[in-house]
Amino acid sequence: MALPRSKYVKEGEEGMYHCFTRCVRRAFLHGCDPVTGQDYSHRKAWLVERLKHLAAIFAIEVCAFAIMDNHYHVILRLRPDIVAAWSDLEVAARWLTLFPKSCLANGASLEEQIRALANCPERIELLRKRLCSLSWFMGRLNEFIAREANKEDQVKGRFWESRFKCQALLDLAAIAACLVYVDLNPIRAGLAATPEESDFTSIQQRIRDWQKENLPADSTSCGSTDCLDTPAAGWLCPIESDSRRRGILQMTAVEYFELVDRSGRIMRSDKRGAIDADLAPILLRMGANPEAWLDTISRFGSKFRLAAGMPCNMRNFAHQLGRRWLTGVAMARSAFVASPPQSA
Image 1 (cartoon, rainbow, N blue to C red):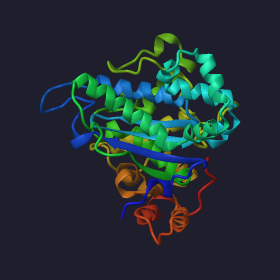
Image 2 (cartoon, rainbow, N blue to C red):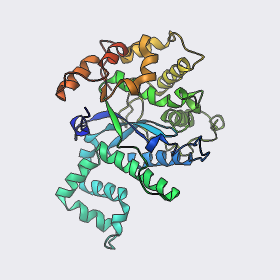
Image 3 (tube, helix red, strand yellow):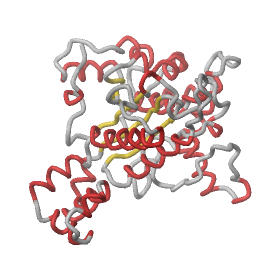
């Protein structure tokens, strides 16, 4: 039985969520359609740009993304602590940035519109909640892409097959496994051989940003014709915490690159086999079972439904929802070890 999203995505509470959406009838509406030969790949850049735009407005951090030909994945972290610290003027300014056309309604200047909106306490309180709402973030993402694509195709009707689906990530082990699962989507689909060649993914973006910061300029040339040409370092939530922002995992960016790279190698059809000896300690430190790692990152999306995490966390989550069990508990028993470190 389906569960309303409001039952497990709590307004005003921090949480990490894996969200994904497919095009209607699973058509290749932002990729190259193998049947018609029509290429819509330029729409993948629309999705990335829109994610960047929304990340700059909402109190929601983009932790990972992968834009495929007929669906996309994104991992988001809700930050109610950030939106609570914004002034009424900042809330008003961000909202009018999200809906700029409303600024033209009565001919007033943007500054006048911001001040007028900030002077409405009840409205500001509502907007403050919306600017940290998973549904509002995803709605503004999907609606924008659907409208632009329909305008380009000169058609009406659905672009996405349904509302987005999402999974709650309950602990560090689930977060790490889902991050790798999302970042390895192109490799799993046979569209790329390495993380740096995986176009329109967060792992490619992170590697390029790291190269720009740490390597000479002449050594950071893009190896792909579809590379993300607007790095805008800092728009993705960092892997490791720094003085400015809280990170996602208890590891450095380079350690995460190594984790994704080695995981990608064992996923390739010609490389299946035992986990690299150097990879096992990293997995154990995160709370993941090395012996089940390949299965975890290959089938994460299909084996977990409403939530993913340690068995104890999934039981607690089920109890909060008034359920006796959740799909994925059996997978959790094999995927994650019993005593994980503290979550990020």
